Length: 445
Image (cartoon, rainbow, N blue to C red; front, side, top):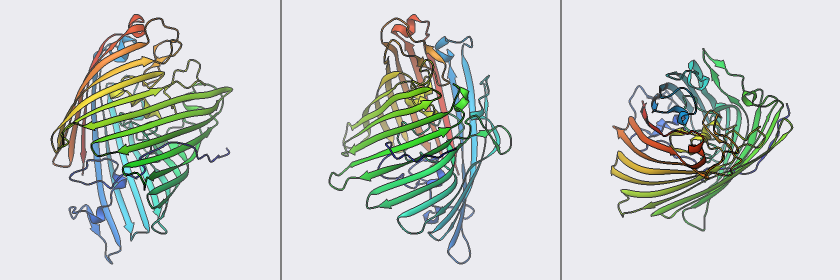
C-alpha cells in the first residue's frame, strides 16, 4: 500500500517530557528515563566493564478498579458493573556511550468483570516496546522498532490510560532538536497485542501512519510554547470493520501554551479530513485549559477545561469519537464514562496540594450536545443518545471528588468518586443517573 507523508498540525509541549525523577516526579513512561545519572540500587543500574556501556532494569504495575451503579447510564440491560484491570511491565535498557541505545519491554495484562472481555485488556505475554536509538550527534535521534509515537503530543491524540493496552507502533521515527525547537517525522504501523503469547491483533488491517510535528519554545516571550502536528493514515480495511472500504484519513492539531508562573493556559484545536469508503471525513475537536494559582505557595489551584468534539462524519450516524484512530480520546470526559462524541464539555476544578505527595480535588462536569441531529456516544462507540432526540441541548451535569497520593516515590494511588445526571434530551430518552468510583494503584521499581 502506498505510504503518504503528511506534515500538518498537532502537538505537544514545545519541550519534550523531562526524564523521570524517581523521588519527585512520578511517571510510568519509563523509556524516557536515563538511569546512568540516578542513584539507583546496584541490581537496577549496572555500569559494564570499560565504563562506556550501561545496563539498567525496571518495571511498573497498574491496577484499575471501576464501579458504576448504572453502566452506560442504564441504556443497556446490564445494570451495575464492577470490573478490575491490571498490567505488569518489565524492561531492560542498554546504552553504549551517548550514541547507541536498545530498550526492550515485556508486558502481561488481564481483566475481570467485563462480560465482553475486550482484547485491549487481555494478553498472556506481549512485546510492548522494543526499539534501537542511533544518535549521530546532539541534534539527531533515529529510533527504529516498536515505540510510542504520541507520548509528546497533544491531549487530543495521546491515548488515555484507562485500558491495559498502551498505544505503540512499529516503524521509524526521526527527531531533530536545535535551540528550543524540535522537529520529528515518522512512518509507522500500529501494533495491538492479542490474547496469547506474542500475538498480534489484525483488526486494524495493514494500515500505515506517516506524519510529523514541529514544536518550539519562544525566545522572545517567556513561558510561551507552541507547535503543530499532523498524521496521515492509509489502510485497506477500516478499523474494526465499521464501514466497508479503505480509509484515508488526515489529522491535524495545533497547540499553544503560555505559562506565566501564577497561571497557565493551553489552547488546542484539531481537524480531520479524508475519506472512508465513499464517505468524506469531516470532524473537529478542541481541548483548552486554564489553571490559576490561588495562593503564593501554590497549594491551591483553580482550573477550567473546555473540551469539544464532533463525530466522524464518514460514519453512518457520526457515532464515533472524534478520532477513531486514537482510541483513548474518549477520556476527554472525566473517568472515561462517555465518549468525546458530538459534545462540548466544561470541567471546572478546585485542587489543594495538602503535602508534597498528597493532592485533593473537587470538580464539576457539564456537557452539551453540538446539535439535535448529533449522537452522544459511549467509550465503546454505542449510542447513548440517538440523533434527532428531542429536548434541551444541555444533556449532562455532574461532580467529581478525587485524590492523588504518592507513597515513598515508588507507589501512587489515584481515586475518583463521581456522579453524573442526564439532563434535557438525554433524560427524556431514558438516561439514568450514574454514580461510580475509579481507583488506580500504580507501582514502579
